[in-house]
Amino acid sequence: MDYELSAQEQAFAAEVRALAERELAPRALEADRQGAFPVANLPPLVDAGLLAMAIPAEYGGRPRSTLEYALAMEELSAACAATAVLVSVHNSLVAEPLARWGTPEQRAAYLPELARGERIGAFALTEPSAGSDAASLQTRARRDTGGYRLRGSKCFTTNSRLAGLFLVFATLDPSQGARAITAFLVERDTPGFTIGPADHKLGIRASPSAQLFFDDCFVPETRRLGGEGEGWRVAMSTLDSGRIGIAAQALGIARAAYEASLAWVRRQRAASAVGQGAEWVLADMSVRLDAARLLVHRAAALKDAGRRVTREAAAAKLFASETAMWLTSAALDLHGADACALDTPVQRYFRDAKITEIYEGTSEIQRVIIAEQLLRAAAPAPAGAG
Ligand SMILES: Cc1cc2nc3c(=O)[nH]c(=O)nc-3n(C[C@H](O)[C@H](O)[C@H](O)COP(=O)(O)OP(=O)(O)OC[C@H]3O[C@@H](n4cnc5c(N)ncnc54)[C@H](O)[C@@H]3O)c2cc1C
Image (cartoon, rainbow, N blue to C red; front, side):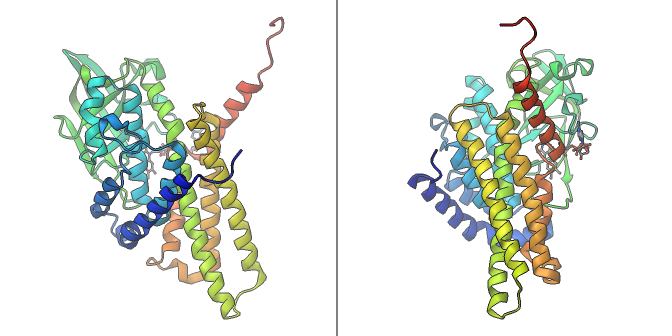
């Protein structure tokens, strides 16, 4: 077991941190206040290959290990969590399943454009009445000559206002549950497909999420990702690794709140205006950050080793997001009334942290996943087996 990052990993993290501090951090507060994504953030991300991390080199990608991807997510999130989630969804919820499940024709059609940032990806699973219980989704896909007609709606689809390619999950037969769910690649300008106005949210306010509407929207058979009824496997395998990105996002938000708190305590100490209680809070913050980082890096390293990481990714996401919530709340307490002003980053970290406990599966759902994995692993052999 090696607790040190390699020289290459450290250099990459430093490169992304410099980019995030130079390009993202200066626009983050205003973007949050306006609830509008700063599109000027995109060209530097493209130039650094950060929209091509899950894309094979033959399609113009700049592939990175999962650990490097997690390092990038931590650095971007410490500067601007709304930009980081765009990067996360684009890479791990769209480019990665397309590279894994796509036909050669689908990969050639979309991966180079995704790598160049000419199309941003979006992942549309959640519906107004199907969130945690995603298998009960109601968006219908009816077979029609040469393809399918989609009808229904999606909500809280991250990136929608900017996206050019949507990975959409629909059912061939709602009475069949997960077995009928099928995945489709839908281009932004497809007739019958409309995108609602940007959502107004508590946190990651600048992330351009929106509702989607499908009104007999025709999608050719060549744009089905995977087989009929394979959509649930596409979605669940995608979320397994997607959660590592959100865990790293929570870690980045928590780290930013810790760094702000450290600077604050140093200033207060210089003025002899802080007691030991504040120092203990700092100590607790740093220990929880370490623990969250170890879980995130373990999940990433195991995925890079080719292991299935359902439990490890859920554990990292659960712990890192709850750590981010605890730590950003403690940072607000430390700073006092000053941090409640809407022009300070600390209150933004607090609101952004809350979202990491909700998307890509709430904390309760992570516990359900972890418990299922534990019980499956611990199941005693049936009597007579052996
Ligand atoms: C900012 C933002 C961006 C998002 N982006 C995307 C996106 O890009 N694509 C996408 O598809 N979705 C996206 N989502 C949706 C997100 O994944 C869902 O909100 C989430 O899965 C929870 O679903 P829900 O909101 O319907 O809550 P519900 O499922 O209604 O849950 C409500 C409460 O009940 C609890 N609960 C539900 N079921 C159980 C259970 N079995 N056991 C214990 N407790 C349970 C939940 O934990 C929660 O506390 C986004 C959400 C947000 C807030």
